[in-house]
Amino acid sequence: MTHSYRQPGVVLTDRRFTVPLDHDRPGGETIELYAREVVASDKTHQDLPWLLYLQGGPGFGADRSVGRPGWLGRALKEYRVLLLDQRGTGHSTPANRQTLPLRGGPAEQAGYLTHFRADAIVRDCEAIRAEVTGGAPWTVLGQSFGGFCVTSYLSLASEGLATAVITGGLPALDAHADDVYRAAFPRIERKVSAHYARYPRDAERARRIADHLLHHDVVLANGYRLTVEAFQSLGIVLGTGDGTHRLHYLLENAFVRTPQGFTLSDAFLEQAQAMLSYARHPLYALIHESIYGQDARPTDWSAERVRAEFPQFDAAKALAGDEPLLFTGESIHPWMFDCDPALRPLRETAGLLAARTDWTPLYDPARLAANEVPVVAAVYHDDMYVDTAHSLRTARTIRGLRTWITDEFEHDGIRTGGPRVLDRLLALVRDEA
Image (cartoon, rainbow, N blue to C red):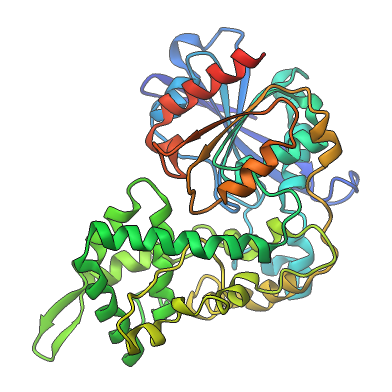
């Protein structure tokens, strides 16, 4: 059953599908997928080609926009758009601390979550494509992790693609998670240095907050334990277009004077809670490192291990000297499953996933080398989340892929410069075709 409704300039239709949990066992357990169809209100009855949007993540549902903002407005000029909640996210049989106990204990939960990587998402897309398009190939736009999924799509089922568009999401084809994070920490340090160059007073503000957290037990309203490592992880925003400004406004409002002296303000704590909690996207924390698992080597809390190779990120050492406190970026650590009440019940499950040694390949270099699908990718200069060198190396291995390398946007360019970014990429891919 479908249900349609209107927003300014668009008609939306809720669509639901049933797919196998394990596509290698089509007669086994099933899960539900949800997607939102969007079409311009003046094109409702037109026979338009389809564009499937794959959200970044992993673990985030598709955008909940109103009307036709940004890249979506540009896409709706010529496409009927399908916004897919990837399995485990949004309305697609969500996976979180409330639902996962239905599977059983941590071992059963971890086994279940092995089916939530890019290869399964691609097979979901192929399972629903015939119902959506009547069997015609569609254009797929993948942002960040969505681009990882598009690369898997080109590897596993390129016959389903008319065109592939990737923004900030060309993955390394064979890098272990350790390789990814060894490349990431120096980029993060550069972003932090650039932030302090823009907002010099923030260096002392960050040190003052970190020092307070080292000497006080701070618990947020939702039960989150705000440790100094958790505070450092707020640096994840520095890879977005407005992230440096958001972090600055957070830091400048950190302390308030009370009868007992200065303490962290309620306003700061409330904002920090909203930025730190994984309650809305726990799957991101659970399977983040597994998106790099492709061989017999466990990911084994890679970001935590690799961070130890970069002692400049140690807050206590920085505060003991005169070095700036360094924020961290897009990385998941075992302490998060102690600090965050949305993750605490899932700590053992996460540990079992980190220890797995049976990950299967996500990409097929031979098929990518023989690619015949028109494909284009935006690669952002010094992207904090996806290593530029890794992306360009992959770009050279995909036959016919055209890159647009730009420093005009950060990783979220499809959000901050959506119409221009999508227009440029569609023009590139059509020029190639």
